[in-house]
Image 1 (cartoon, rainbow, N blue to C red):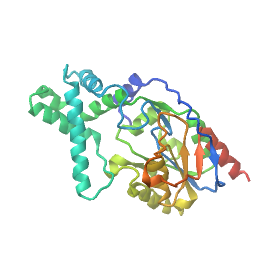
Image 2: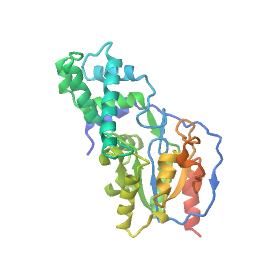
Image 3: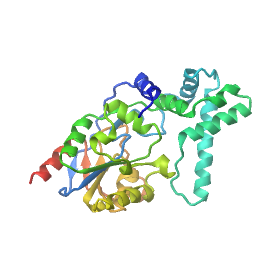
Image 4: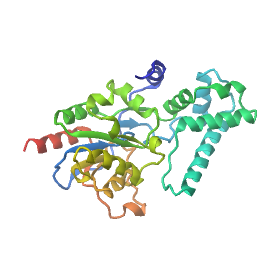
Length: 299
């Protein structure tokens, strides 16, 4: 069950957002024959003010200072130092993971905040009380400032229709501990309501790897195999040509690029990994997907 403070923090910061048109036309290059659909979250199911987790809407220094102040930790004038220390802590862990052979490493952001705050206290830059702060609270306060999000238009309508059709539904997302609570608070429904089970909620912070790492998609493949479903029978929908479409496609999933918001659309036209790659579909509105899958199911 979600803690009251988590929901209260999310609601206090949440502001409605509308997607911005991309000008990219929808495209269907092959008929859908599906047993399941998996989704990205940021920029696909949720409108993201900056397009992805780990980016910044509010200046990081202002967000860091505000996050600490909200928890009664005075950091006036120290915001830039706090944000820089957090960023360098993450970079250090990424570098260590890459030395161990992980191409696309991921961290648990609350642990990074713990390390960053400890370092700043040791350096005398923050009061000793900062060491006692709940890093989950700090990380959520910070995230809600730097990356405001809101449900994408048609989200509940789409998920409701897909649930009625009996499709296997799941998530593969570059995410943190707060991603699921944010989604559930803003939609007013938990993921189980939509039929999204725990084993098909695949989050980068849990695995220590981020998309487009094959590990995330292979983890989904294993969960699907227990249902006698293969990747070729499943569509993966995401807003990033490399992280989502190319990443899922090389594991054998059908792919759809979500081009419904200019802020989050990542075409990666200069990335050699996606040169010549085409997703099976391009979707510009979540309701398009529900309609297309419904039409296929009724044939």
